Length: 178
Image 1 (cartoon, rainbow, N blue to C red):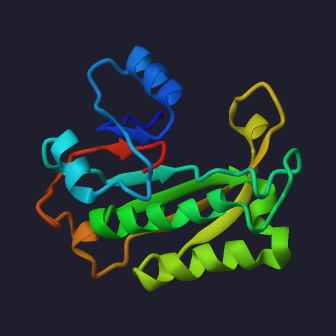
Image 2: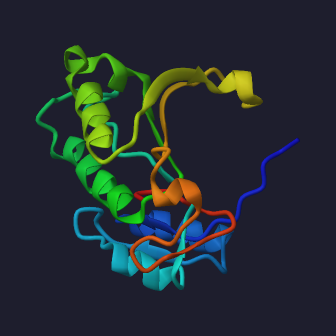
């Protein structure tokens, strides 16, 4: 059985990402905004008040990728803070973060530990594992790190209640920078 989800919206600062999204999901809103400036109110407006059940994001990986410079001071490494702020405001039932596998071990695991502690601070206990895309039907070996966090058991998001002016969506995802 294949899961069925309804895409509620997406966000990224890159105009190319916006054009690609608009070609593939004509009727799904896209917010072109830097994650550091993106607000929960902008998301509520774009999704007409529908709060996503799942928020998926892939913060930039250049600071960790074995193909990049791997600089711990790369300013893009801090974009995950904007993502976590949005998660905190939306209170989805689950969070998924995808990144290169080196994010788990690079800088003696400090970045991984930071992300885990920040998600825990807002109530999301997180597990991280490295998965190979070939094991999921992709015709290439591509190992990526996935962090997944269900909402806390006592959280209104887990119970399906309304949070922060959003009504619960039946299904929904906000990928990209969200």
